[in-house]
Amino acid sequence: MPSNGSWQKVRFDEICKNISDRIDDPKQADTDYYVGLQHLDSEDPKISRHGSPQDVSKTKLLFKPGHILFGKRNWYLRRLAVAQREGICSAHMLVLEPIEGKSTKEFLPLLMFSDDFFEKALMVSAGSMSPTIKWKDLASLQFFLPPIEQQENILSITDKIDQTISDAQNLLEKTKNYMVSRRELLLTRGIGHTKFKKVPWYYGKTIEIPEEWELQQLGNFMEIKMGQSPPSASYNDKNEGLPFYQGVTDFENIYPNATMWCTDPKKIANKNEILFSVRAPVGEINITKDKCCLGRGVASLNPLENNLLYCFYLILNNKNNFLNFQQGTTFTAINQNELSSIKIPFTSNKEEQQKIMSILTNINKQITQQQSHLTNLKVLRKSILNSRLTKEKTNVIN
Image 1 (tube, rainbow, N blue to C red):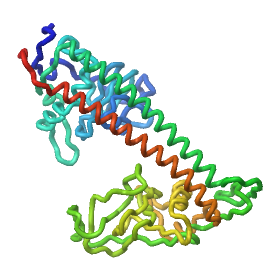
Image 2 (cartoon, helix red, strand yellow):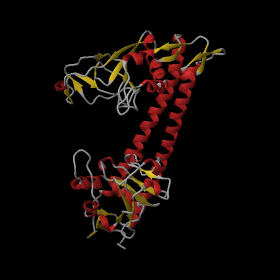
Image 3 (cartoon, helix red, strand yellow):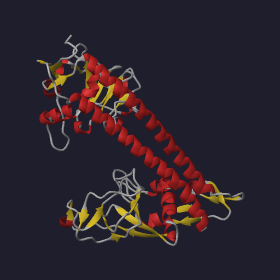
Image 4 (cartoon, rainbow, N blue to C red):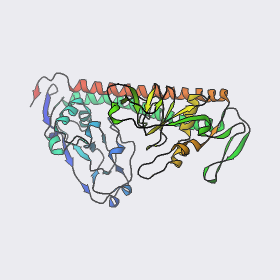
């Protein structure tokens, strides 16, 4: 064991080994727990969701508690997590087992989340579309490790931050769930109503809405404009022309951030119109914060004499109805007539619209604040980790 003041220079395969226990038929695996790349979140060491071996095919890898699952495909997304139970995982992952001695087993994931690991992995990855890292290339990488005592100190600090992050994530999830339930109640039952009526709904069902409300077709209270692809030569990423939206991808934010612009738009939406994704995925929405170009994958919905945010939340709450009307199998879409004809519970009372919007906006502000706090905690964790692993290394043992 090195002295407390000495850093060590090690090869990666000196501190962990690759486990390649293959499971050729996932359905015959003695487990109900499957982890694919889609189940791992960037820079999150916990596995918060999983799938079933019954839903996958082809060769998978067996892992056990304490193993590290590292997404070797598109590795730059930094998807790795520590397994808490036995299961099988995608063959696009590496299953790594820490070797104790020069490092503690809990320290290895921290090293792999560091910028030092990222920069060295960049040098040995292969491929452009889906960059991948092979074990033999990863094994030869060299790193400096702090002494065990310092590793344990770093772990103590990051464990406290991780607990705070976990608490923040749990609070955010609860607030999002509350938002959904509150939104559904307000947009079907309204505020302060005592008398309700049953109205025909889809698939032979009925729903109950306030007596003063009506089922309205979307086209009756929204002006709908379908997008059209501009000439491909007019696309650019240099902020030239109007912001260009081909679809809705910024699901977490009400107002999207443009990544492309267009100098020859064919269809235009103005500020404060609802962007609606009409092609896979159908039903995702944003609100335009500037005049913009509409591509083929989106439509703009402009409220007719109604509160913009009320209409936004109204559409968001009825997303499943839009999904029921989409056409296609491998590539789903909805056309203007179908979109316009969809019925939604609606109040024309402007005062009630304003009250509903105010309640939901306040909850959404809480969600935004909690998301910002969570992001700041993750930045703090990363900053502390990198500073502890990139400090000047004296008395290095080779």
